[in-house]
Length: 280
Image (cartoon, rainbow, N blue to C red; front, side, top):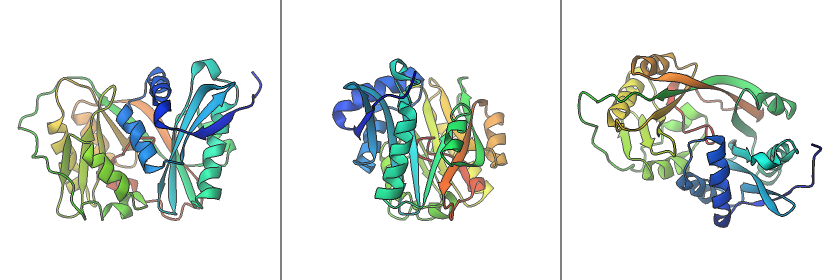
């Protein structure tokens, strides 16, 4: 169908019933708590597309200072697909980030189906990543690591690994996680509930030894009665091997892409698990 007139406005609490429903139709793993986190972090940067007065699609943006921002949760209800709504949401999000917020680099994690569209909008492929899934119930050899809340300074070393300061996001994720592990050298790992599976990540560490220990501790903390998702950069070969050795299987391929000036790309070899594709 041809493109139609689309009205795009900020996404609010009253829209989350639709947002979570279209998320469920897509089979994604986010929860209502995740939607509320997106809005809390960027009240003016999450969007709802309406077509003829009816909700049709969503998109979110998350800013990490002035250097980097993320676009995520680009979802269109099946009744409104192939009308240009997803493209309109993407363009709106990009304008908001680059013109209103002055962000120098915009990133997203693209599916194979979406990558050609993003390339037409000027995005460039950076590196690949895979989602790993563990369905099998594996009882840990030892009990889970002790949980403690995040403290000031726990996330200070992450900016060099990720490429930007995302401490505000990490504080929010830690508050919503059922397992959190920290290392004296600045490494950390979190695990939280998702709608379909528990989510292992993010995990950030300066060296493979620390990163693998954090991941093993989180695997031990995972309840055996739920699936576990784990998103890993292809460049992090040690984390990929640990996933395969721990009963995980690759189920999804994505490509990290950027638009603008990728001046601080971070180091995927120090990212042992991502925060999730909608956040980076």
